[in-house]
Image (cartoon, rainbow, N blue to C red):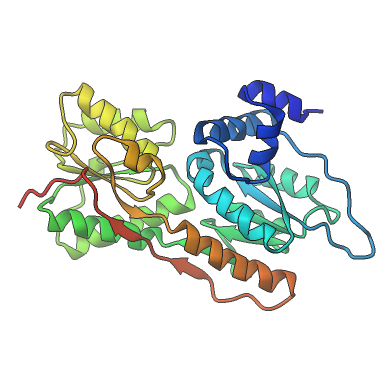
Length: 319
């Protein structure tokens, strides 16, 4: 059985740091938090939680299921979620799942009353897991409680902003084949059609294998573009490096706009212009839905929360 010691050794951090990350506590460096989350996923670590009183039928634990591509984004989101759960005297369990089978195994391991509710980020939730699940940015069934970032609106807004800055050739780097990527692609197509800009499919690439390979495919397509939309700030960092390798500068040759706005966005040079992922508002909406679930109240209407434009230095005005 994998132990917390195994996780701490693989992540090269202390057991106390692993505990703080798994509980979503603040005060952990981002690189340490991401190292722990990667180790948890690689080792398939499951904290050993004893069952709570059978009389109350409550464990006071909330399960949180992430996909392997979420580690950067949730390093900001998890502390906010942990703080909100602590205010409700709830504790957090974290696990990873990328396929329906993996989701099923997680749900089985958290069965028998181990978690009062389960929050999932991304992924394709199996029908068998819907009764206790609140989905965030996931494929959902009609009867599933859900909260989502309005990725379609975010991408439409990004395209309109780039157009206002004189960019008519906009490339896009999707995260993969997940729900969020499909929403982003839909927003991209709607924006292009509304602006009467023909869609060049060679300007649409996906990081199914890696962001670097996707960018290489884009650059090797010889299709001209003056701007690039990415879903993650880490993908923007990869794009900037490869553009530099091809003797292209950001933003003079290619402007970049991200749909995330993590702590990395301000650290890059140039600092990233973003449609900001609304973490605080998403957590607030998520807690409202969780309260309804725990109190056995009906679900609210499915919430779709819009991000805000944050202008920095990675987009040049070509007008």
